[in-house]
Image (cartoon, rainbow, N blue to C red; front, side, top):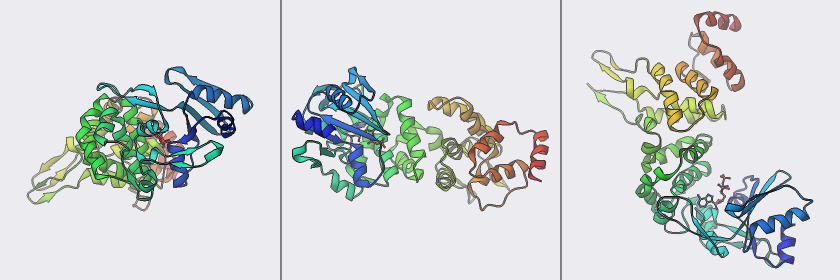
Amino acid sequence: IISDIVSTENLESYVIGGFVRDIFLKRESKDIDVVVIGSGIELAQKVAAKAGNPKVSIFKNFGTAMLKFKDLEIEFVGARKESYNRNSRKPIVENGSLEDDQKRRDFTINALALSLHKDNFGELLDPFGGIDDLNNKIIKTPMDPMITFSDDPLRMMRAIRFATQLNFKISDVTFEAIKENKERIHIISKERIIEELNKIVMSKKPSIGFKLLDESGLLQIIFPEFHKLKGRETRNGISHKDNFYHTLEVLDQLVPHSDNLWLRWSALLHDIAKPNTKKFIKGIGWTFHAHNFVGEKMVPRIFKNMKLPLNEKMKFVQKMVLLHMRPIVLAQEEVTDSAVRRLLFDAGDDIDELMKLCEADITSKNEEKVKRFLD
Ligand code: ATP
């Protein structure tokens, strides 16, 4: 339908961005971005009329329109050129050509366009070598990365998020520019940062993203409590383990067991208080006494700072941190004699069941019930 309209009206129009990238990566994608040299809103209205009038949502301020068709969400926008001022990631927008529009994209792999006009239907327009970068698994910016990241620092989080989700490498020049611009992340809202961080947490191998966040210097800014887990200290020849890498290992191990975001956050936070409770006792060595209790108290502060929801999800994470989650993660691990732990272990990846069980306060009275349940 779109191709019919743009061909009859002789408009220049393209599918662009993530949808095109995902075709080449053979990933399923339901969000389609259509760019037109002209008005995106007008094109959306014409397409809707021809498609039997599905609902069009118009965002006048952004000059975009969104149309839902079957299970697809199609967004229409006029090709644009963007410029930025230093204190905001909100661009100043003018009409532009396809290439202007591709230049404003964050990464070469997100700047691919396929023509919708019948004269050259399906022709790929790739002025920045996005296909080569897809084949070589490289994340890099179409323009000078120092400018790209300074203009919109959220792109630094996006670079690390895509590198994690796709298991791609961020090019050296691009990664250096992230390091240089890390302080600019302060102009980005916490909500946008956590959105990207949660995509890293939900990926197949979250450790990739956390290591990149650490290497770039962003982790220290956006999640200092987690950064503090890094490192090993040695006294009298005795060292403790590096809780940063240990936590990432636990998180990666959890992935095949559960795709529940809050259980993954529990994994992330299960040792969070260790840097605060760490002590070296002569004759005994390193102890982290009561770190789970302190961790439970730290959860609300971390959730508040990171603008995560302060509701029953947070309470679940608190409880999991308190109870420690290793028995669930390591299915092979021997079950301890604690009835509560056994119960958690038995719930396995039935997370709904686990959530319900965790809602009940775990008191000794409760523990009796738990024991009966297990018998
Ligand atoms: P996903 O659906 O996994 O988030 P996506 O690439 O579709 O991936 P969107 O956030 O939907 O991500 O963005 C769609 C397209 O818009 C991107 O492919 C990219 O071309 C462009 N884009 C999105 N955010 C930015 C940004 N901050 N700076 C520049 N271009 C962006």
